[in-house]
Amino acid sequence: MEWNWQQPDWPNFTWDPARLAFAEQHFLIWGGALLGTVKHLAGEERNQLTVEAMSTEALSTSEIEGEILDRGSVQSSIQRQLGLAADNRRIAPREQGIAEMSVDLYRTFAASLSEEMIFRWHRMLMRGRRDTKDVGRYRTRDEPMQVVSGAIGAPKIHFEAPPSTQIPCEMAGFIDWFKRSAPAGTQPLPALTRAGTAHLYFESIHPFEDGNGRIGRAIAEKSLAQSLEQPTLIVLAATMLARRASYYHALEAANGRNEITDWLAWFAGVTIEAQRRTLALVEFLIDKAKLFDRLKNQLNERQQKALLRMFKEGPEGFKGGLSAGKYSKMTGASPATTTRDLVDLTEKGALVRTGELKHARYNLAVPLKTLRRVTLSESGELIEG
Image (cartoon, rainbow, N blue to C red; front, side, top):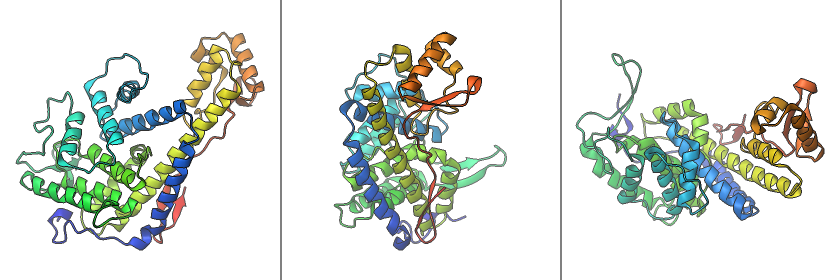
């Protein structure tokens, strides 16, 4: 098979702007709506949103690569680097590295992309690694860089990247393109088009031994932030993780040619879905602040602990609802105390009960949202479901 970078039109990507036009407009409008909603958050809730969104992205972008990290450690590291209150836990190198990259991306979103920045991110990601030869520099091995799956004796090659000798030249071209396509560049591109192309372009070069996916997704988020002129805080990697199979399929399908309309349509849908997920989270945090403000000095320690645990589950709600048994386990309360606490929370409008006796379940008395998938149709319409 001839890969995209082997074709004569590489890297002159082409696409159908008409199919993406509505999605581009929608992304910018919702970006403004998200900014306006965030302004209604008090300082503490705004910090919570920042840490929650950044840590979710850090964990998700790692999980896409099969690396499961400790959420508490990642959040603690991000909080320390942002100057927020954090615990004193010891942070392992992997969690520290991805947290550092996330904060660096957040703080330097407006700065020009450079080789030094990309190398810095790679050093952060590879912190503590001893199995990677080229850290903080492009790969140098002579062996082909391939993305494979299947048995050792019969692997399936999903993609083969350019040889290492071509990488410095390819990356110089990519960085130059990223600057030219910026909002203030000489050849500016619409937000979703630029971010989606940047991700595919970078992944096609695959310049590192490891870490390409995480850095490629960070570059896409940097591109989106530059278009909105602010850190997006949208949970892009988390949404890609939820659609991991289609993500891999869309990337693989795009590796064979340089007409990339289908890839950009997939990317546009998943980005708008991520944007909506973040907006739902912001509205959920506002509802949380209002509820705790209304019940200030009316909750005992057990009740407050249980509510905070339920809010931690996010805008889609506490899965399965809160039972008396879960409340007792969560707070250490006796059955009788649990019953009194739950009745009191219901009467105060903090919880809503469904079912009776042992089948009784409790949910937060705030609007919950079912987050639907967003795709882009052949005609450019946004389809939910």
